[in-house]
Length: 446
Image (cartoon, rainbow, N blue to C red; front, side, top):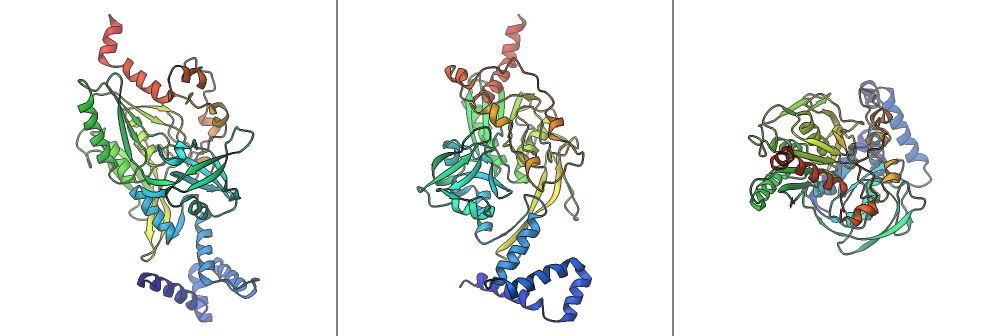
């Protein structure tokens, strides 16, 4: 047994052994923590004495901790062993699996978003889908970490997912081959008309520097000066707060980027421009930020900052609405708490929690043949059980106020496919930027 594992095991046994040591000790616990703590200890004693089978102490203690954190919100959790390792590999952007960002809700596995280019994305899994079976085995009611562990596996192996997609009458099955998810946090392409398109797929380490490198490469590819930039944050479930600040700072030369406010000392922080990068690398250039219901957390920080400073026009669909900050609090060398410690706010003081970022121009993804059905069942933060409540008490129905049909958005997915348009939201953003280039404006004014 490794030394770290031995120390951890001994610590657990020692902690359990000390709790029932004396009546005086229990009295001190009750006095400090209140009568509610005695309920927990009473349940522990009765389970140990009366459960139909012997139960290990670590099972009970870990279960109590997990339940305690699950009662707080959907994003707080106890991580140890493989769970903590999975989080670290997600931050590094290199692991073997399907490439999904998921949440647990009432025992079900909900998809926040597939990572762009991942096996799940290529197999057609979409934000808002539910996974009900793995290889024909029902996973409803499993702990989320256990379900995720089953989806992980050796690269090259296949797993059959049974998927329920809101809006469809029947679930469907899809075989997905696991891969080494060496996610490219940033990908880019030069579109026609010298329009740059930078896709930020997730906020792992060095995303700010990667976007800067992408920008430099686009400049070398362009024939002359770039005429506009699409910053694509769709289906990006977030990641590092520091990288969200760094990315925003690339395009802002002054003002606040985001603020976070928490209860504990040190959790109320303001992040300002000009602290990571100097100047606006695309000064004077029009920018469109694309978001959708799968854009969460760090993505919303960037979109909110550029929107509030009027540095970019935000297009697409309303974002996920995760306006809380999770801190990783170590518990020894092999365990940690992922605990919600603060809310974050855009420069104008808007809390993203529940409501999300509302686009300046709502552009539906007409390329999606299931758009009409799926839009009625889009999964956002406000749909998760136990989510933090927005202090303003905003309701979803108040946010979705524009129900009028827009004459610009009447084409069907089939009609777009005939025109060779595979991604309508991107197409609309690029065309908008083309129409606003100095050359295009000058030609229209003649």
